[in-house]
Length: 331
Image (cartoon, rainbow, N blue to C red; front, side, top):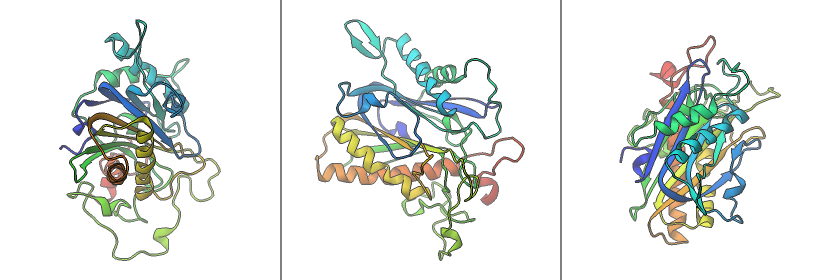
Protein backbone atom coordinates (compact mmCIF):
# COMPACT_ATOMS: atom_id res chain seq x y z
CA UNK A 1 0.00 0.00 0.00
CA UNK A 2 1.46 3.33 -1.14
CA UNK A 3 -1.37 5.47 0.23
CA UNK A 4 -2.49 6.27 -3.31
CA UNK A 5 -5.58 5.65 -5.43
CA UNK A 6 -3.50 3.21 -7.47
CA UNK A 7 -3.31 0.83 -4.50
CA UNK A 8 -6.44 -0.56 -6.13
CA UNK A 9 -5.29 -2.99 -8.82
CA UNK A 10 -6.11 -1.94 -12.36
CA UNK A 11 -6.13 1.83 -11.70
CA UNK A 12 -3.72 4.40 -13.15
CA UNK A 13 -3.54 8.18 -12.63
CA UNK A 14 -1.95 10.81 -14.86
CA UNK A 15 -1.52 14.59 -14.67
CA UNK A 16 -1.00 17.32 -17.23
CA UNK A 17 -0.74 21.02 -16.50
CA UNK A 18 0.33 24.38 -17.85
CA UNK A 19 2.29 26.59 -15.44
CA UNK A 20 1.42 29.81 -17.27
CA UNK A 21 -2.24 28.83 -17.31
CA UNK A 22 -2.06 27.87 -13.60
CA UNK A 23 -4.43 25.03 -14.30
CA UNK A 24 -4.40 21.39 -15.30
CA UNK A 25 -6.10 18.01 -15.63
CA UNK A 26 -5.93 14.71 -13.78
CA UNK A 27 -7.09 11.51 -15.49
CA UNK A 28 -8.07 8.31 -13.67
CA UNK A 29 -7.92 5.31 -16.02
CA UNK A 30 -9.19 1.78 -15.42
CA UNK A 31 -7.62 -1.25 -17.07
CA UNK A 32 -11.11 -2.77 -17.36
CA UNK A 33 -14.52 -1.03 -17.31
CA UNK A 34 -15.79 -0.49 -13.76
CA UNK A 35 -19.20 -0.01 -12.16
CA UNK A 36 -19.54 3.65 -11.15
CA UNK A 37 -21.88 6.23 -9.68
CA UNK A 38 -21.71 9.89 -8.68
CA UNK A 39 -22.88 12.02 -5.75
CA UNK A 40 -23.24 15.81 -6.09
CA UNK A 41 -23.49 18.01 -2.99
CA UNK A 42 -22.24 21.41 -4.19
CA UNK A 43 -24.76 23.98 -5.39
CA UNK A 44 -22.83 24.89 -8.55
CA UNK A 45 -21.47 21.68 -10.09
CA UNK A 46 -19.99 21.20 -13.53
CA UNK A 47 -20.05 17.61 -14.74
CA UNK A 48 -19.69 15.52 -17.89
CA UNK A 49 -21.75 12.33 -18.46
CA UNK A 50 -23.52 12.91 -15.16
CA UNK A 51 -26.88 11.76 -16.53
CA UNK A 52 -25.33 8.50 -17.70
CA UNK A 53 -24.39 7.69 -14.09
CA UNK A 54 -27.99 8.10 -12.91
CA UNK A 55 -29.29 4.82 -11.51
CA UNK A 56 -32.22 4.78 -13.95
CA UNK A 57 -29.96 4.80 -16.98
CA UNK A 58 -28.56 1.86 -18.88
CA UNK A 59 -24.78 2.09 -19.02
CA UNK A 60 -23.28 0.76 -15.77
CA UNK A 61 -19.54 0.78 -16.44
CA UNK A 62 -17.03 3.48 -17.28
CA UNK A 63 -13.48 3.54 -18.67
CA UNK A 64 -12.00 6.63 -17.04
CA UNK A 65 -12.72 9.80 -15.06
CA UNK A 66 -11.45 13.29 -15.93
CA UNK A 67 -10.93 15.95 -13.24
CA UNK A 68 -10.04 19.42 -14.46
CA UNK A 69 -9.55 23.05 -13.64
CA UNK A 70 -10.97 25.68 -15.97
CA UNK A 71 -14.57 25.73 -14.80
CA UNK A 72 -16.95 24.83 -17.67
CA UNK A 73 -14.11 25.12 -20.19
CA UNK A 74 -12.43 22.20 -18.43
CA UNK A 75 -15.25 19.81 -19.32
CA UNK A 76 -13.47 19.39 -22.65
CA UNK A 77 -10.73 17.48 -20.82
CA UNK A 78 -12.94 14.40 -20.87
CA UNK A 79 -12.86 14.52 -24.67
CA UNK A 80 -9.07 14.36 -24.60
CA UNK A 81 -9.09 11.35 -22.29
CA UNK A 82 -11.73 9.77 -24.52
CA UNK A 83 -9.61 10.35 -27.62
CA UNK A 84 -6.60 8.63 -26.02
CA UNK A 85 -8.72 5.61 -25.09
CA UNK A 86 -10.39 5.48 -28.51
CA UNK A 87 -7.01 5.31 -30.26
CA UNK A 88 -6.39 2.14 -28.29
CA UNK A 89 -9.77 0.59 -29.02
CA UNK A 90 -10.96 0.89 -25.42
CA UNK A 91 -14.58 1.65 -24.68
CA UNK A 92 -18.17 0.48 -24.93
CA UNK A 93 -18.66 -1.61 -28.07
CA UNK A 94 -21.95 -0.80 -29.80
CA UNK A 95 -22.16 -3.11 -32.84
CA UNK A 96 -18.55 -2.39 -33.73
CA UNK A 97 -18.50 1.28 -32.76
CA UNK A 98 -16.21 1.76 -29.74
CA UNK A 99 -17.16 4.60 -27.40
CA UNK A 100 -14.99 5.27 -24.33
CA UNK A 101 -17.17 6.27 -21.38
CA UNK A 102 -15.46 9.12 -19.51
CA UNK A 103 -17.42 11.06 -16.89
CA UNK A 104 -15.77 14.11 -15.42
CA UNK A 105 -16.08 17.21 -13.25
CA UNK A 106 -14.42 20.59 -13.00
CA UNK A 107 -13.00 23.08 -10.50
CA UNK A 108 -13.30 26.86 -10.77
CA UNK A 109 -9.73 28.21 -10.94
CA UNK A 110 -10.20 31.03 -13.45
CA UNK A 111 -9.26 33.80 -10.98
CA UNK A 112 -6.05 32.40 -9.51
CA UNK A 113 -3.74 34.73 -11.45
CA UNK A 114 -2.84 32.42 -14.32
CA UNK A 115 -3.10 33.50 -17.96
CA UNK A 116 -6.54 32.35 -19.13
CA UNK A 117 -6.41 34.27 -22.44
CA UNK A 118 -6.15 31.11 -24.54
CA UNK A 119 -7.87 32.39 -27.66
CA UNK A 120 -10.62 30.60 -29.55
CA UNK A 121 -10.24 27.14 -28.01
CA UNK A 122 -9.43 26.29 -24.41
CA UNK A 123 -6.45 23.93 -23.93
CA UNK A 124 -8.23 21.41 -21.74
CA UNK A 125 -8.92 18.80 -24.41
CA UNK A 126 -5.20 18.57 -25.16
CA UNK A 127 -4.39 18.54 -21.45
CA UNK A 128 -6.86 15.68 -20.98
CA UNK A 129 -5.13 13.68 -23.71
CA UNK A 130 -1.72 14.35 -22.16
CA UNK A 131 -2.96 13.36 -18.70
CA UNK A 132 -4.27 10.05 -20.06
CA UNK A 133 -1.00 9.41 -21.85
CA UNK A 134 0.90 10.05 -18.60
CA UNK A 135 -1.25 7.70 -16.50
CA UNK A 136 0.74 5.32 -14.29
CA UNK A 137 0.56 3.59 -10.94
CA UNK A 138 2.89 6.17 -9.39
CA UNK A 139 1.87 9.83 -9.44
CA UNK A 140 2.61 13.11 -7.67
CA UNK A 141 0.52 14.91 -5.07
CA UNK A 142 0.11 18.61 -4.35
CA UNK A 143 0.17 21.34 -7.01
CA UNK A 144 -0.18 19.06 -10.03
CA UNK A 145 -2.89 18.22 -12.54
CA UNK A 146 -6.34 19.35 -11.48
CA UNK A 147 -4.78 20.60 -8.25
CA UNK A 148 -2.25 22.95 -9.86
CA UNK A 149 -4.42 26.06 -9.67
CA UNK A 150 -6.52 25.00 -6.68
CA UNK A 151 -6.94 27.33 -3.69
CA UNK A 152 -8.71 27.15 -0.34
CA UNK A 153 -9.93 30.01 1.84
CA UNK A 154 -6.54 30.60 3.45
CA UNK A 155 -3.93 28.28 1.89
CA UNK A 156 -2.92 26.84 -1.47
CA UNK A 157 -5.05 23.83 -2.40
CA UNK A 158 -3.86 20.78 -4.26
CA UNK A 159 -4.34 17.17 -5.21
CA UNK A 160 -4.21 14.49 -2.53
CA UNK A 161 -4.70 10.75 -2.24
CA UNK A 162 -4.99 8.10 0.46
CA UNK A 163 -5.91 4.42 0.82
CA UNK A 164 -7.11 1.96 3.48
CA UNK A 165 -8.61 -1.48 4.05
CA UNK A 166 -11.66 -2.68 5.92
CA UNK A 167 -11.24 -5.30 8.64
CA UNK A 168 -12.21 -7.91 6.03
CA UNK A 169 -9.41 -6.84 3.69
CA UNK A 170 -11.49 -4.90 1.16
CA UNK A 171 -9.41 -2.04 -0.22
CA UNK A 172 -10.67 1.48 -0.76
CA UNK A 173 -8.72 4.51 -1.96
CA UNK A 174 -9.47 8.15 -2.68
CA UNK A 175 -8.11 10.99 -4.78
CA UNK A 176 -9.19 14.60 -4.22
CA UNK A 177 -8.65 17.90 -6.04
CA UNK A 178 -9.05 20.46 -3.27
CA UNK A 179 -10.20 23.88 -4.47
CA UNK A 180 -12.41 24.45 -1.44
CA UNK A 181 -14.50 27.49 -0.62
CA UNK A 182 -13.78 26.93 3.06
CA UNK A 183 -10.69 26.08 5.05
CA UNK A 184 -9.03 22.68 5.43
CA UNK A 185 -7.13 23.89 8.50
CA UNK A 186 -8.42 25.08 11.88
CA UNK A 187 -8.31 28.82 12.51
CA UNK A 188 -4.93 30.35 11.70
CA UNK A 189 -3.00 27.30 12.90
CA UNK A 190 -1.40 24.23 11.33
CA UNK A 191 -4.03 21.74 12.48
CA UNK A 192 -6.18 19.96 9.89
CA UNK A 193 -9.89 19.36 10.46
CA UNK A 194 -9.18 15.80 9.27
CA UNK A 195 -6.63 15.23 12.06
CA UNK A 196 -8.67 12.52 13.89
CA UNK A 197 -8.38 10.31 10.82
CA UNK A 198 -4.68 10.85 10.07
CA UNK A 199 -2.49 7.76 9.73
CA UNK A 200 1.25 7.82 10.35
CA UNK A 201 1.76 11.58 10.25
CA UNK A 202 0.75 11.65 6.57
CA UNK A 203 -0.15 15.34 6.70
CA UNK A 204 2.20 16.63 9.34
CA UNK A 205 1.07 14.83 12.49
CA UNK A 206 0.02 18.08 14.21
CA UNK A 207 -3.17 16.63 15.71
CA UNK A 208 -5.86 18.99 17.00
CA UNK A 209 -5.40 22.19 19.03
CA UNK A 210 -5.36 21.78 22.80
CA UNK A 211 -8.58 23.80 22.96
CA UNK A 212 -10.98 25.35 20.47
CA UNK A 213 -11.65 29.09 20.61
CA UNK A 214 -14.60 30.95 19.15
CA UNK A 215 -12.32 32.44 16.50
CA UNK A 216 -11.31 28.98 15.29
CA UNK A 217 -14.96 28.21 14.59
CA UNK A 218 -15.61 31.42 12.66
CA UNK A 219 -16.35 31.04 8.96
CA UNK A 220 -13.35 31.47 6.69
CA UNK A 221 -14.19 31.53 2.99
CA UNK A 222 -12.66 32.82 -0.21
CA UNK A 223 -13.21 36.55 -0.53
CA UNK A 224 -14.15 36.92 3.14
CA UNK A 225 -17.59 36.71 4.81
CA UNK A 226 -19.00 39.58 2.70
CA UNK A 227 -18.07 38.01 -0.64
CA UNK A 228 -20.87 38.11 -3.21
CA UNK A 229 -19.36 35.71 -5.76
CA UNK A 230 -17.63 32.67 -4.29
CA UNK A 231 -16.98 29.93 -6.83
CA UNK A 232 -15.13 26.84 -5.59
CA UNK A 233 -15.13 23.08 -5.77
CA UNK A 234 -13.63 19.96 -4.28
CA UNK A 235 -13.66 16.88 -6.49
CA UNK A 236 -13.01 13.31 -5.37
CA UNK A 237 -12.77 9.82 -6.80
CA UNK A 238 -13.20 6.78 -4.55
CA UNK A 239 -12.30 3.33 -5.90
CA UNK A 240 -12.72 -0.02 -4.17
CA UNK A 241 -11.88 -3.57 -5.16
CA UNK A 242 -15.31 -4.67 -3.91
CA UNK A 243 -17.97 -6.07 -6.24
CA UNK A 244 -20.81 -3.52 -6.17
CA UNK A 245 -23.94 -2.92 -8.17
CA UNK A 246 -24.59 0.55 -9.54
CA UNK A 247 -27.03 1.39 -6.69
CA UNK A 248 -24.46 0.17 -4.16
CA UNK A 249 -21.80 2.33 -5.80
CA UNK A 250 -24.17 5.27 -5.46
CA UNK A 251 -24.63 4.54 -1.76
CA UNK A 252 -20.85 4.31 -1.36
CA UNK A 253 -20.49 7.71 -3.04
CA UNK A 254 -23.09 9.22 -0.72
CA UNK A 255 -21.45 7.89 2.44
CA UNK A 256 -17.94 8.69 1.24
CA UNK A 257 -18.80 12.32 0.60
CA UNK A 258 -19.18 12.63 4.38
CA UNK A 259 -15.39 12.87 4.25
CA UNK A 260 -15.72 16.34 2.71
CA UNK A 261 -17.48 17.56 5.86
CA UNK A 262 -14.79 15.96 8.04
CA UNK A 263 -12.03 17.87 6.25
CA UNK A 264 -13.46 21.20 4.98
CA UNK A 265 -15.18 23.96 6.99
CA UNK A 266 -17.67 25.03 5.63
CA UNK A 267 -18.51 22.76 2.69
CA UNK A 268 -21.27 22.12 0.09
CA UNK A 269 -22.09 25.82 -0.26
CA UNK A 270 -24.40 27.35 -2.92
CA UNK A 271 -21.54 28.02 -5.36
CA UNK A 272 -19.44 24.96 -4.55
CA UNK A 273 -19.31 22.30 -7.25
CA UNK A 274 -18.50 19.45 -4.88
CA UNK A 275 -18.72 16.08 -6.66
CA UNK A 276 -17.61 12.56 -5.71
CA UNK A 277 -17.33 9.59 -8.07
CA UNK A 278 -17.33 6.04 -6.68
CA UNK A 279 -16.08 3.09 -8.74
CA UNK A 280 -15.81 -0.63 -8.00
CA UNK A 281 -13.46 -3.04 -9.76
CA UNK A 282 -15.44 -6.10 -8.64
CA UNK A 283 -12.81 -8.38 -7.13
CA UNK A 284 -14.20 -9.01 -3.62
CA UNK A 285 -17.67 -9.81 -2.30
CA UNK A 286 -19.11 -7.42 0.29
CA UNK A 287 -22.13 -7.91 2.52
CA UNK A 288 -24.78 -5.53 1.11
CA UNK A 289 -25.73 -4.12 4.53
CA UNK A 290 -23.06 -4.20 7.24
CA UNK A 291 -20.20 -4.69 4.77
CA UNK A 292 -21.24 -1.79 2.55
CA UNK A 293 -21.76 0.40 5.61
CA UNK A 294 -18.25 -0.31 6.87
CA UNK A 295 -16.83 0.26 3.41
CA UNK A 296 -18.54 3.65 3.31
CA UNK A 297 -17.22 4.55 6.77
CA UNK A 298 -13.64 3.72 5.78
CA UNK A 299 -14.09 5.49 2.43
CA UNK A 300 -15.28 8.70 4.13
CA UNK A 301 -12.26 8.69 6.44
CA UNK A 302 -10.00 8.07 3.43
CA UNK A 303 -11.55 10.99 1.52
CA UNK A 304 -10.90 13.29 4.51
CA UNK A 305 -7.27 12.15 4.59
CA UNK A 306 -6.85 12.67 0.84
CA UNK A 307 -8.17 16.23 1.14
CA UNK A 308 -5.74 17.07 3.94
CA UNK A 309 -2.84 15.46 2.05
CA UNK A 310 -3.64 17.60 -1.00
CA UNK A 311 -3.23 20.82 0.98
CA UNK A 312 -0.25 19.51 2.97
CA UNK A 313 1.64 18.60 -0.23
CA UNK A 314 0.79 21.77 -2.18
CA UNK A 315 3.25 24.47 -3.24
CA UNK A 316 2.30 28.11 -3.77
CA UNK A 317 1.75 29.45 -7.26
CA UNK A 318 4.71 31.61 -8.41
CA UNK A 319 2.44 34.60 -8.93
CA UNK A 320 2.19 38.03 -7.25
CA UNK A 321 -0.01 37.92 -4.16
CA UNK A 322 -0.42 34.14 -4.30
CA UNK A 323 -1.76 32.34 -1.25
CA UNK A 324 0.96 30.62 0.77
CA UNK A 325 1.16 26.85 0.95
CA UNK A 326 0.82 24.99 4.26
CA UNK A 327 4.54 24.20 4.16
CA UNK A 328 5.39 27.88 3.66
CA UNK A 329 3.65 28.80 6.88
CA UNK A 330 4.17 25.77 9.07
CA UNK A 331 7.22 23.94 7.71
